[in-house]
Image (tube, rainbow, N blue to C red; front, side):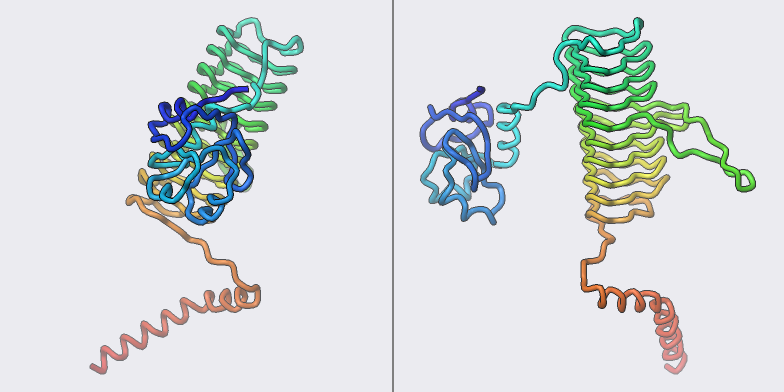
Length: 341
């Protein structure tokens, strides 16, 4: 079992030690449920009451919150970031695959670098390149001409269609599908004519893609997901989208085709962004928001309504339908008043 002393963790995090620097930490936990040998954190003031009774061996805490706390502590500017970094150090997640399973089907033209692991019943297609220490979980299918950068990990049952490229240290969770056809059709007198999706998908370094998320291939140009992007579970990225560096998109959100999301954006869950739009760097979109026009100025954008009793919601819905009529009446009244004056 991995362990670190408080002194070692303080050096890694750039934190100040309060207490026993030789104390060993084996895992992390919440303030409420922590036990001896565990490290917890206080990042939200509403949990401060739990600080008094926590059984954690030590706590990550900010300078303003440490006053009055008598236990062992690592003091730093952002305890939550510190928690994330310590969690990585003490991570016990198993590997997606170990070695190359006998049942894996690997095309003779595929190139496997040192340290590649491939799980049971995985299929590796023609001209695939798997770089150093790539892990391919059981049941994965990697199509023709795909390239996976070093350290990238695919959990079980991920599907990569042809011509998909992943950078280094990516994590793709189970049932994700990357490179499926975009929704491209022309209509001729009611008959849908399919447009072959001949672009690929290009994904940068350190990208994480959640379970059952889909990323469509480009119609002609590539769909692009840049470095550091994180996509939650069940997100839909349509064809020819471009997602800028370090943007985060929460679960059940949909980005329609040919839309460009800027860098460092945050898109809340269950949001929908229409096609052929652009969103400025640093934009925050609240959960459940429908974006139907270009956003040129960074800020926080919201279009949801709060939950209310059904009876009140029904009345307000009727009033919303009357809004245009009310506007026209007020406009007519203002015009009449201006004429009289």
